[in-house]
Length: 489
Image (cartoon, rainbow, N blue to C red; front, side, top):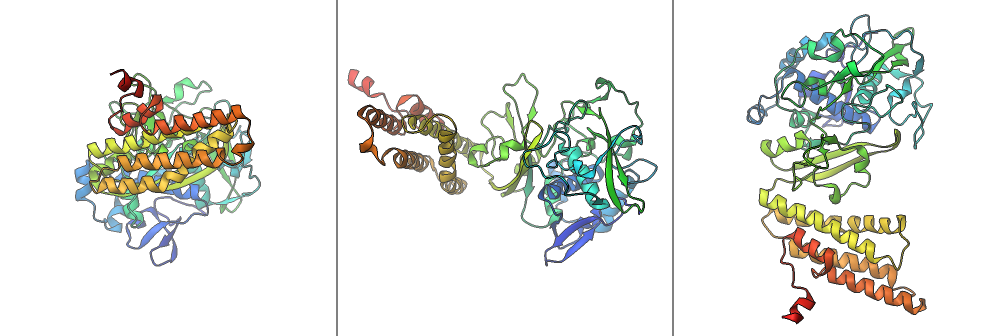
């Protein structure tokens, strides 16, 4: 059984009316197709990215203005014609070039279980959520999607087994206009020019080497990426099928695929310590317990965009349209071991530059407040995990109020004073809940420490002390004159 990923129906989808279908990529332009329907959420995310990559490869907008002019759904047959020239590169099996696979048969490599394509299946070193033996074989469509998942998010896998173009288990952010599948895909397509089939890396005959350096690949001159950013091949892989070619049962892999350097994926945010360093992709571990404290440089613009940059798809959206939802996802990895797959929906707001600065101040002030609370709890809780959990609880408890203040900010209101009051109330409530019970049973020295810690915490929310000054500074509020300075005058 042959499968061509351009021509053939292979993508499971749910339709607006609840019907489940299997479609070819060009059919995402049909009305009523809602979303992909793979049995795993990481495959759904990978599917979104692959579809975005297909449109970027075959028929991208030339500019954000062009994107707006072409915002109407194309005719499916028109999209089919645009994708057709790329079909020779998208055969999953066969004697010629294979989708995301090595041109060499890799006959000298050992055969690995097919489930190694999944980031949570252990494979090359085990994982925290070890789940082996689940996939003795995969259907051709599921194997194709899992192969794309691995190549686009590959973790560390031992000597010569490269991480993906954006690191192992990258953080992925995608615009969701809350409409249908075409709208989702089109919202995230970068601007550019249509590619040729020869630009896909597995369509180029290149000399292989056991030395990693010759395989280093840089983005095109004066660009951060081309279509290869969506179809990179850091791993040298061949899929092996059963006798009837209906199931993929094994994988062959050799070390030293392509080593991607200085590429920037349009669906991943980046940061760096200072403007002299190379940009680094944010990883999925950032999404564990994702909350508003992670917004800057991911959901909202950071104050210093020279060191924290939202994904290009998010930055484009601010020029293309208004509010939307941001889908934040990724595999949280630890030393190449999968911890958890996380997926969060965050509101994406469209604010003026001045309002964006206020939003950043709300986040940064909360971060200082949480640190102040953690420090104040020293007489009550031991250092380490217990106090860090209270810090996390502080952010969780103030999340709803933060979102409410962002909505007020969108409507032109100034939420800073109200936010300061919210931070103060939550910090003191958390402190009192831990410090007050059985206070009379503590020794006098401990009581004195607790009273002093609460006083310091209270003063911080009045703008006094180092942390108080930082809170007020982040909020752009006037810092009060120190009490001793008032007395001296």
